[in-house]
Image (tube, rainbow, N blue to C red; front, side, top):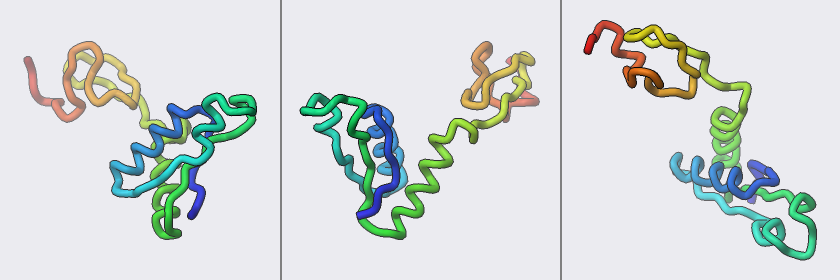
Length: 107
């Protein structure tokens, strides 16, 4: 078994587990029950995400670093339809719902 991720928040670790599952990597969470009300404080036991083999571990770490690293966010983009500036995490314009690829299309 290989540890690929650790965090104190169960929701974040569960999201990381789901992200790996979407990429075909099986994983398991350790310390889940200690962190949810065991004999130690919730901040005392970090949750850990583990995969079974080394090849999957390297791939899992790369996926998690890319998707969960706040510094790897996509840059802002300007809507080709209405000109609104959108955060990089938006797949379509928040104002007019146009997609970035719809540069030459009009309503």
